[in-house]
Amino acid sequence: MTLHTLLCRVTYMGDDVTENFAIPFIFFDSQELLVIKRDLKTGFEQSQKIHVDYEVKGGSGKIGTVIAFDPPKTGVSWTIIRKTSPKQPVDYVSNDLFPAETHEQALDRLTAMIQEIYETLDRCLTLPFSSVYKNVQLPEPGAGKYWRWNMTGTNLEAVDLANKGLIGLPLSINEGGTGANTADLAWRNLGQFASSEDISKGRDAVKVATPLSLVRQTRVLKNLSNKFFR
Image (cartoon, rainbow, N blue to C red; front, side):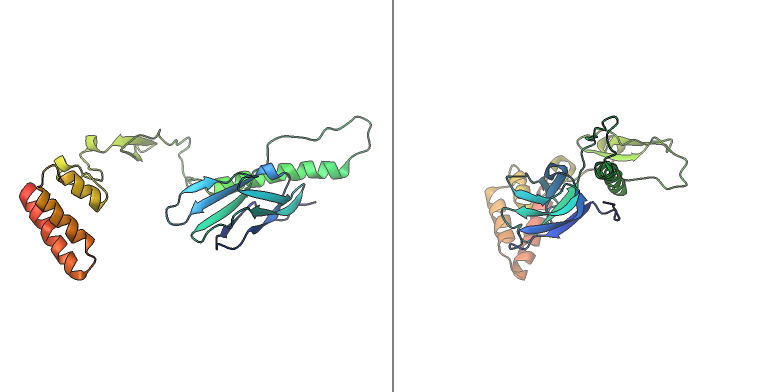
């Protein structure tokens, strides 16, 4: 058959009910599909396993269906991506009749691979068409580092924030912060300096979810700040 569409991925939203998800593009083997579960709130992604999380019907150059064993819940999505194995499984025998159908499927596989490369490139960071730069590389990851253009403006580099006179978050206690990214951890971190009575007052102010509690919380935080960070 011919491939009239560039489509090689599709995403469905979970609703606690739907189990069958159509694959609207041709694929050749159930092992040549990726099924990715994504938490829409956190962005966390997890690959689903065939025969464990889902089964597949169809394929062999046709469209098909992914069948979830448990319906994806509301708040998650399932993305189905074709990932054709870069192999050439067709063997031509000398003096045999030309296997037109087999030959066409081999061409379909090659076209499918090209489509998948295009789909991946569409999600990549690229320079403008008119850019004079090439061979720009991403730096190796590093804890607490950020990316910036180097001093010549020709490539990216990973730089330590502290060495550049900048600050990272969360701000440490020594630098005037709490060393935390949650209220509860902030109170615990400040506990090594504050009295148990101060901490108790602060926790009570955070726990009471009323407009008045917000005023009290602000006062407690201000008192703690004046007491320990003057």
